[in-house]
Length: 333
Ligand SMILES: [Zn+2]
Image (cartoon, rainbow, N blue to C red; front, side):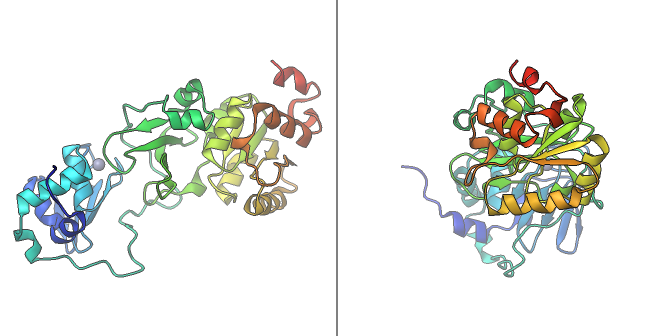
């Protein structure tokens, strides 16, 4: 029998301030309710990567993306499970800590928003997640082969922090620097995707640096990471994902600045079709736009490679727009 512990009670009872004290975390600066300093979880150079709100009893590191409550903090420090973290806290603080229960967060303000990024810009991360497994069965199930996963740096991450127990997908900027990891749940857990607080999707296009490095004047635009991976795998390396269904002004500038032709390949649902229409009208007159009509209820990542190829060729009049006149020489090789 394991040690008995009530997670909720420990989380409520133990103050983050006391835990920071316990670890003797050096160099933390305190301003009113906020604590700021070098991250005790991943170390690092920055003196301001780690932030904690004492009244909310939560922390966040915008370098390693670790965040959460006292249990998450101890689990990350000790590289142990949440359960084990709760047991340790109970052992360290026993009944003492419960003398000062923290105030519950006011409703509507539960989201941890301790990070304010510079306008429009996602700064490069100062670390890389290591020990990522590109052969995880979740990726096999989604039809992503090992070579694609390895090329994109995608895999299952078992380490500590925000991305723990998820498929991590590095998001790189145009200069190929990693600006965030997206974490996909593998077991139906919620949220389906985790992204670091403060990350601006509208400032990036997933896979832009690879698409832009090809010689193609055409770019295929899809909604999600897995759509992008599957289209890439089907033989079209000039593909980017919006990470949604809308095109920001910044994304538009980047795409029309680099490419002459855009093939929209959004999902075959209401949101995808509406997004496609909106983007199409936004781009009219700025570049050539073709729409690949994904069948109702389908999305690119669920289609066979041949179906992806057919859709793209149909959208571009058998490839004449896409590749000049001899489309099939490209696709069939
Ligand atoms: Zn950190």
